[in-house]
Length: 196
Image 1 (tube, rainbow, N blue to C red):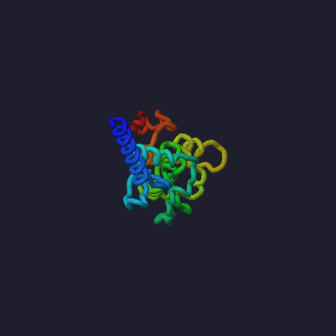
Image 2: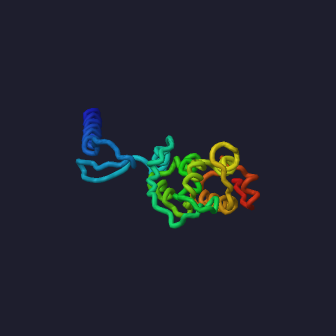
Image 3: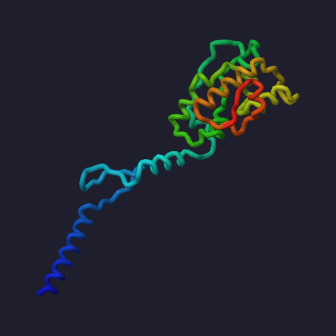
């Protein structure tokens, strides 16, 4: 009798376990946040902690530089005086901290919305002589200064070098970008401390 009662209890427990697993199980993949709609219960729920999801989202943006991911919207300048040289010329907008420099110093981890915000932030825009802009390219300040006077290609005099460095400094600080690829002594000549 006791044995039969024990076997019945085990059977009931087993039956309860199987039914519970069946009722609460569901199929279907998870979205990037680790969540999904359960078709049977009609609820929306998640399987992973938010911190893990955020970390994975952040990791997923790491990759090769792609200018298009910044979604920069070009616009005409309102002057024919180049910011760097202070001479009259054909001008276009230059990113003081280039998109490629930003990518190399931290933006590779950003989502596309932050990349777009950075690319279109006018704090980081100056009107540049188009030929000087082409020469500067994605250079960091020390390389831009070298290119301006290395007797290779276009030669030009950067008139407002400390003003340029100050804007560069402000933009990098605003977006929490690394100064790792920059020259400390060059910035210190303009009273800017980039040591982290």
